[in-house]
Structures are given as structure tokens and as C-alpha cells.
Amino acid sequence: MTPQLHFVTGKGGVGKTTVALCLGLAYAKQQKNVLVIEIQGGDRLSNLLGVPPVGSTTREVYKNLYLIDLNPWDVLHEYVLLKLKFEAIYKTIFAKPATQKFLKLIPSLQELLYLGKIWYHTEEQPTLKVKFDVIIVDAQATGHALGMFRAPSAIENMVPEGPMKRIATMLRACLQDPTKTVVHIVTLAEEMPLAEAIDLKQKLTNELTIRVERVILNKSIAPINSSILQTAQRFKNEQTLTEAVQLLENRQFRAHQHMQAKTFLEEHFKNPPCEIPFVFSEKLNFEDLLNIAKILEPIRQLG
Image (cartoon, rainbow, N blue to C red; front, side, top):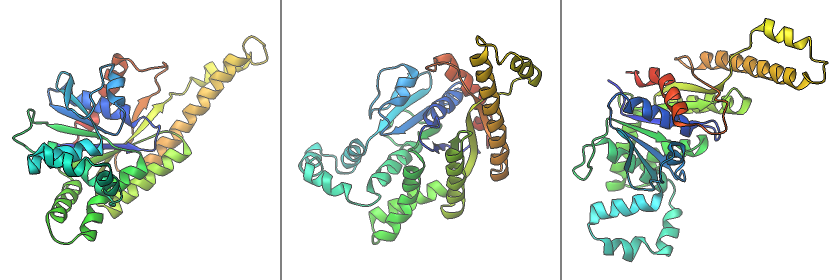
């Protein structure tokens, strides 16, 4: 059974937003209804696709591919209207600055709101126009993502028996169900992202009992044929070629770093890393995104 809920996370700056979007494209190309969710992302997903911002409203931006950008106050607004039915109650109580300032002080509340909204889209709800086959969450960077994954347990331990505790228990069970939920970790062939990836994997697996499926090694660089590099190095002292040879040597060094990182990750993850090649352009175009989506096909095929 293919998991329905995929979280994509990693150290900030490793390319997790691109990976989340391309994984969504991979599923959408297979005629699956896909929702890609970003959390307070500033509509980075829509910017990558070159479409108008979607904000907090779910919108189809490509055949079978839907986007939404969550923020806590819109999620709270939707939840209050779903339960209490009256806009006036929300405006009277929850829209007040003093109330929102107080709500910000409640530990794990925002994270619980996000998870509740995500879970809501996994269920067949009468208010939803589309039943999504797959939901992909462009989660926040490592530390904040861990905070979100820990939120249900924190709420369970903090509040007495009642609706809030039951919701937290339900969300924790959803996260810990390996047939429903998986986490993919994105990293680079650099010391800090690699260290965070391993630490995150250990905490998700051992502390939170959440299934970690794949690690994605982004911006990989293939090595240059050694004979080509050696030939180029013969001309290193020629003024017009010095910079070009240095660029080749730097690329070869980066390729070596990548191979070391790949070996390192293979020692810590059950599945080999999915490698995404470095794209030599200032901005990814749609064809680049589709090419990355093809590379992510093995993740789409997991069961």
C-alpha cells in the first residue's frame, strides 16, 4: 500500500521545496490527485512553477496538481467555522489581537493546527471538492519540523482528557502509521546538512517512531574523466587557461565530496540516496522540474 502522506524536510537551503514540488509532479503525471502543502512558505511553490500565488486557498495549478500555503490564522479560522459555523463568533473572539497574542503563547498549538489541517485533507470530507490520492508537505526546516512532529505527544502530555487530547492522539497515530505516513529527508554533500539529516533520521525513528523512507542527495555533480582533467592540468600555468583549469579541479573536488556523502548516507539509511544532479542555471524552468520529477520516480513507486 502506497503511503498517502509524504513530509519532505531537511536543513534550510538544501532544496526541499523543489523536491516536494517535483515529487508532486511525479504523482500528478500518473493521474493521481496530488496536494502539495507548504507551511508559511511565502508561496515559494507557486513561484517555482511560475503561477500566481495561491495563498491559503487550495488551487489546481497543473493537471491533477494542487497547491496551498498554510498560515496558522487562516487554519484556525477554517477550523472555528467548521465547528462553530458562525463567522461572527470567530470575529468576536478569535480575530481579536489580544486573543491571537494569547494563542501564540500556547505551546505546540500552531503545529497542532497545521497537522490537523493536513490530516483533514487525507480524509474524505464532505466539504472538500477533491479527494486527494497523495498529499506532500513541504515541511519547515529540521528543527521546526521536529517541533511539529512532536506536537501531538506534547499536547497529549499537557492537557486533560477531552476533545483536544483526542485530536492529538489521533494525529500522533496518523504520523506513526507507516502505511499512511512517510518522511523524506533532503540533504547536500556538505558537513552540516549531512549531520542534520542523520540526526533527524535517528530522532524520527527512535524517539517518534515515524517512518523515514528516503534520503535525497541534492545538487550532485558527476566526476570528470580523469584523463581529461590531467590533460587540462598540463596547461594550468598558461594565463588564459588558469581559471578554466581551476574550475575543472573545483568540480572534481565537489564530485569527490558527493561520492563520500553518498557512501556516508548508505551507511545510515536502509535505502540508497536518491541523487538529483546539479542544474547549471540561475533559475529552474518547467522542463528542469519535470526532469527532477522523473528522477524521483523510485520514491513514487514505494509501497
